[in-house]
Length: 309
Image (cartoon, rainbow, N blue to C red; front, side, top):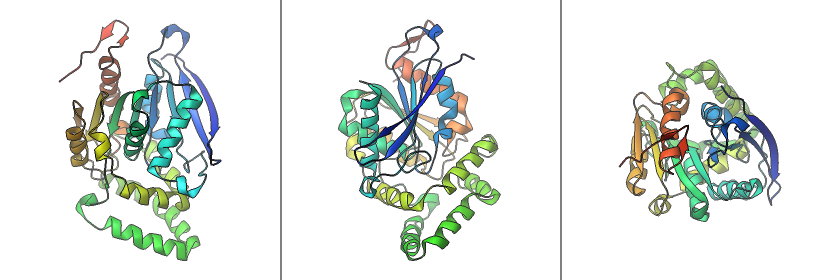
């Protein structure tokens, strides 16, 4: 495997949030690298969700990844900016900071509405889009085949602000334990037969340490965001990946995106969970590579991937 250079840094937004980021550059042996790609994870997730893709593509092109505001190493800034639009503006500001005129954008789950909002702001600066188990509208309705998640959220929100200490303890205890890992697999969050246990454990620890003061406003705004109109206006090559065993954001959400985005390609992954980039990283990498190289007409070591209808 080639070695890549890794650079870390932070960017201060207008409202004072500190956004942590990582940049990986191909070694000089690669020659002129292809266009950069930016990875955007979902709510309460962390950079580890894309570690297979980051390692793979950093040997081909500049790779950018960062912590969303209010997540991991990034601070939250002002509460009114803990929204889908606020996070989209963060990404636009980061592209300015990095000096990127254009880039390929890859989003997972909650990262998809962020990318939709970014496209709404700067469509001319996006070379292509990839949506992994994402959605353009409220994914909570009917989650797990039931209509109980949204009422439970508002009940928990009201009670959290009445007794924050107890709820912070319950949040951490409910997530960072072996039972929750098993439950997340049953719920379609991961395929426990193929996803590495350490990746699920890292995720659980990350979620348990996220502040509910940040999670609650982001989650609530996510439920109210509707990007279907934006999706219908997308004019760049778009790849949509769906896990057939994802019960968190079932296939219908990706199928609706596929219908809305003219000319998009829909790839179904059998036995893929909500985090199919962790379940089947090699397959996801190859499909994403074909998308990045073929749809833009780029070459890699003499190979040219053709666009599929």
